[in-house]
Amino acid sequence: MNYELNFEYLIERVTTQFDAEQVAQVYRAYEVAHEAHTGQTRDEGTPYIVHPIRVAVSLVDELNLYSPTLVCSALLHDVIEDSDITRDDVGQMFGEQIAEVVWLLTKLEDVSLTEYLASIEAAAHTGAPIVKLCDRLDNLRSVVHTPRLEKKHRYIRTTEELYLPLAARTNRYLHAELSRWLEAARKHVETVVSNE
Image (cartoon, rainbow, N blue to C red; front, side, top):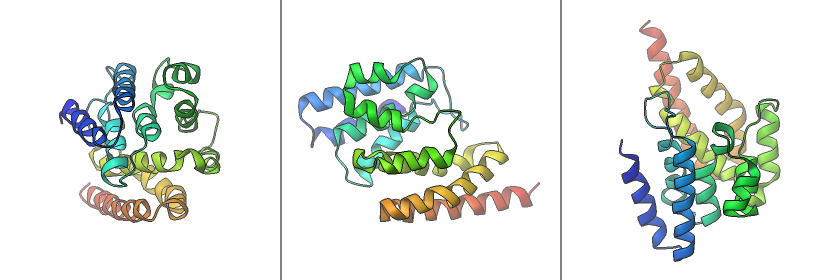
């Protein structure tokens, strides 16, 4: 997968809706995320940067949500977790609104998934729940490519128990897509287990 082309596609999409300053901010967010994720790969073997780009594309393509704050936050959503970049760094580079969303999306080790998602939902006014659900949708779509069966089981369980209820309260489309991809993941795991 050519992630530069995916990013160029994202830029083409937002250029029709964003002003020049907002497009420049999206470029900066991509550059920061690309640098932060350099050398990191996903389980399916793709460069990590592919994932945040797909999350940002989901916002504009699937939800028709043209928010510079949320597009930048989608691109940056894992930088605090996966690099030396801090919340303050994000705030200095992109402003407090984006820093707040990125911080909400940062899963700290000492916080349970239930508490983490509750804090995101409590800040619904920021748009963080939509970005988080797009993040989970992309992860669910690609989990079939991970060689780790335990991870597949975990994604299925947490999607069903935690993310589907959140999606039901947040966005009908994301709820339907998560349901559809959850079923596909279940069928995939059943096939893998029956072939062992």
